[in-house]
Every structure is written in C-alpha cells, then in structure tokens.
Image (cartoon, rainbow, N blue to C red; front, side, top):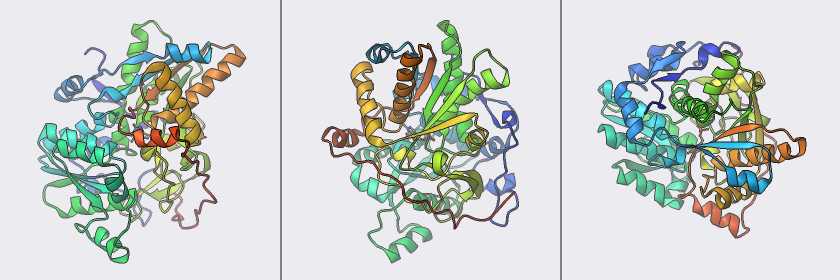
Length: 443
Ligand SMILES: *Cc1c(COP(=O)(O)O)cnc(C)c1O
C-alpha cells in the first residue's frame, strides 16, 4: 500500500520546451471551457494543468490497491541467463490488473471524476478491445453506463474482448453504426465497411455531445491520461529503491499513443533529468514498423481522428488518413503520438525504435518460455528492444540496468501467436507516406 503513490506526476512544466497548445481548425488555441462538453471539470483542469504533482483522491488510491496495485516489479533472471547477458532486466507487470493491461489505471480515474461531476454515461471507442474492457470495468465499479464503439472488423473477428466488456455490463456497438450521423454517412457509402479507429472515435464523440449527461472518454494521447499512468513509474522508482537497486540506465516501453511508455518513463525522467542523478538515463520508445509515427512521421499539427472532430494536436504523425496494416498489436495501430512524448522525441530525450512483427513475436515467445508471462503483442515490441539491448551489453561487457513496461498479457491475443507459430505471420513495409493533406499550421 505504501508503494502506491499519493499523487500523479505531470511532466508538462518539466518539458525541455513549452508544450504547443491544442488548436482549433482556425489556428487559435482551444480554451479549457471548450472541452467541457466532452470531459468533466476535473479532467479538463488536469489536461491544462501546470502543477507538477496532482493528488490522487483517497478513494481512488484505495481502489488502485483493491484492483492489484502496486503491480509487481519482476526481474527476468531466466531471460538474462538464456541471453548470457551481464544486463539486469526488470519489468513492471501491468498484466495483473483485472482486464490484463495498464489501461485500468486511467479508466477508473476517468470514471471517478465523471461520477463526481454527475455524469451518468460514457462513450468511447475501442480497436482490439483493451481500452473498451478497462472502461467497461470502470463503469461497473462506479455505476456509469458505458457504450463502446468497437471497430467492426475486430467486433466480428475478436469476440472474446467483446464478451469481457459485456460481462462488465457495457453496451458494445460495431462501428460504423446506425446510431450516429458519422456512422450512417459511412454506411450509406459502403454498407459492409470494416470500420476504423478514426471512425469509431468520431461516433463516440458525436454520441457524447448529442446525448444528455453523457461524456466521452479516451484511453491514450491526452495529458491527463498519460498523467494517470504515472502510477506505474512512481511505483517502480520506489520498488527499485526498496530492493537496493540503482536508478536504471534504460527505460523501455512500446508506443501506440504513448500512455504506458509515459507512465513508466516520466517518473524516471523526473528522477534523472529534472532532479539530476548520476546515471545517463536512456529512454527507448518502441513502435511497429507498419505504423512508424516516431521514426518516419513528421512533427506537425494533425487531428486525432479520421472525421477531424478532435482539435489539432502537435505530434509526430503519419497522418489521420493513414490506414495501418492489420498487425496483431492492435493497440499500436494509431497514427499519432501524445504531445508531451512528441516534444521529448523531437528534443532527442526519448529515442524511438521500430520493429517488424515477426521478430517481435519471436522475442515474445522467448520471453514466455523463460519467464512464463505471455506478452501482449503490443508489449512484445518492448521485449524485442530489451533483448537487443541485452545482447549488445554482452558484446560491450557493460552491466546496464534495464526496466521495461510489460503493459499487458497476451492471453486474449492467442490468434496472433497461432499465426506466428504456424509460420503464416507477415511483415508489412509501409510505402511512401502522404503528408500533403495535413493542415498547414505553424503555431
Ligand atoms: C493500448 C495498449 C498499448 C498502447 O497504448 P499506449 O497508450 O501507447 O500505451 C500498449 N500495450 C497494451 C497492452 C495496450 O492495451
């Protein structure tokens, strides 16, 4: 219980340069009051806050404990031995939370602040279903109605996360749906449209702003979401101290929108780069080569969704019209990046790396065979980077301390593993990326 932090860490005031504001399409900054139809008061305040540490309400902190926090920080000794590496490898295991991933950390916080504000119903989108199931659980715990717009292709192909959401009492709707104008417009052009995350976001936002006492909830990218996830890193800092370990040389995480990476890495950024420490911390952010926003995207203002309903956010992006290849790491198939993380990548404080999915699954299988945990296909990207760092250490003879985020387990992603094991898994090389349609805004 003592390990679970009493506050979240907000990196915004500690960034190497000011965070570019969210903009409206006319190029003027979004005012906090303009987000109040989407989010409750407290979350809007958090989104714009310049306070470094924000208190976690007592009731919420107790709920974190009831749901399994602190999550374990484990040493991957058998993997170290197998790789014959002098590196020390630790991982923060978020898969022990009830829905199997870190997304619960922000889902319960968002539900809590919505409940406090008198909201009765939340809408959201989900791709593979990790975020939808976390919010469905949070809705059950706080007595909120939840409607999840689930990308139709996943709704049909991945029934188990849909079942999980329905167990918690959420209503799951395949998107595009008949419930919204954006959904109906897509269906009238193409009745068998498989859907996309961008369309599902548009539907969830439209539903929220047109329904009574309903608000919208997002599982990544926004400042308040990343801040809620810092419970991961704040715990890890204390856990390393408790076992007498030093601060790490490397922190590693996979990146979709950036929330699990930020959750682990930002508190170490605070310890090493803000407060100052003796170590030369390297922060490694890992993405799929099929959706390479950090390694091949540009740093520009872009929308968060396909229908361009969200404000413009300055981020690394492959463009909101980008159609990601059907890789199994559904949580990493997002075109953009959280704005705070984008500032750190631009300033070369965070080092991006990209991998193909076959090499990622190979590393994940090795991890399962040595450590027991079957990584989520998303988290497996971090595993692959860690294996590479550990193998390099064998050559250089250094003894780096590595901490990575195992953001979730892969037990509901066995179809991906099955394809990998049967030799049928493919890699996808993105061709030329079109940036020409991005709004020409310099702020
Ligand atoms: C959603 C998800 C991700 C990617 O999202 P981030 O916001 O970048 O963390 C990574 N891992 C798992 C297990 C997820 O469910």
